[in-house]
Image 1 (cartoon, rainbow, N blue to C red):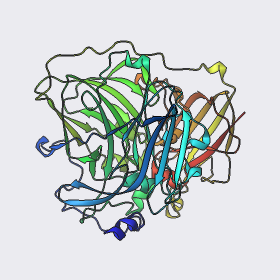
Image 2: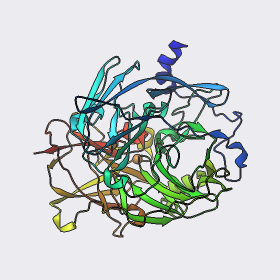
Image 3: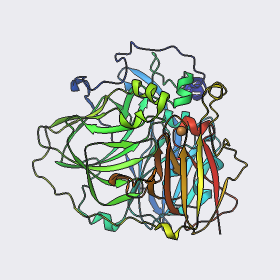
Image 4: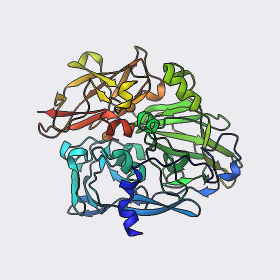
Length: 497
Ligand code: C2O
Ligand code: CU
Ligand code: CU
């Protein structure tokens, strides 16, 4: 058993395992499927606030192997942080000096990257901060950002996809006094609920199935079963009428267009980088891998409603031939169930005003950089996809961009490939200026660190790289479809004083 666990990461990438169906479900649960199947209580990750040692908040994190039972009777070999699958919700305060002590108890090197955080490059946990088996790496930095929902995950060079797939990821909350005073639902696990959305595929024996086809490598790994916080077919028993959901798309490649089964309205209150200026009323929200959103949803006692994915339709139609292929495969499916039979009857009011998120004006920008996302079809596909940015695949020894500390910059991201790519920048939060010249929707008019760029789209963002410079240690920018990142759709930049 021990030996199997030690070897599973390697074994799982070997691929070539046949298609499965008779697991008790033949694919992702479709929308018509009866809600009664969704009865597993939602797992709520433990909170990890660390302990204060000499004025610093010290948090111990240990990467290790685990065993999980997603499918009832069949155990699945997984990996986790301080547990069997995924990690705790790390919770810190703005202004804290934190020390994250990361110990690698796996049999292969790994890293933990703090996605969305403004921090020194050497503390970023990217491919240059690999932790050897048995070693401990200390990430020490000050929390400068305002309240937001960030996350952390493995960023091992060429191994990010598989390590995250097995479970090396978790949420990272930052609190501040202003947001604590807004009257938002904020009792963790009661009316302030984390939702880590992931899709996974399994072999007959219950083991995870990763990259078994060329399709998985090109389009990114998409699973057949939805997990929420590591629970399949889950049902959350709603306790309060006004509930806050902090949603992370923690999937390797799947893009969700989320809506409730009865298409009820909800309020988006936060984007990747924190609270919006005011709540935005929506019926659906698109989240690409790496993106987060916080929403407020109102339940009536007795409600029983599914959260589901609705095919993107019009957006996919712009994707040409491959778009049509993808659209044909993009069926509606259920993600989880909210059962409000036992919820309390008093309704808390949602605030109407939140914060003023940071913004920059176009005429402050010192320069524009261009990033063209490359994915070669046809012969390039046979040779491994030709994944790159500006014509080059990722190279650990090449610095692609040098950004002067404090400069305001426009980054232009161009997608001429046939599929959508979520573009992510380390160290900073940005604002989206426009998509093909059009202002983004209200739900994207906040701070972002990841933006979905559709085929034939040019997205312009504006940002400022602040607080930390290090000419020798790079940060990454990349596609957050992890198989694309691993295949080379990533580049490096340094911030220079
Ligand atoms: Cu979510 Cu380079 O990371
Ligand atoms: Cu990141
Ligand atoms: Cu991509």
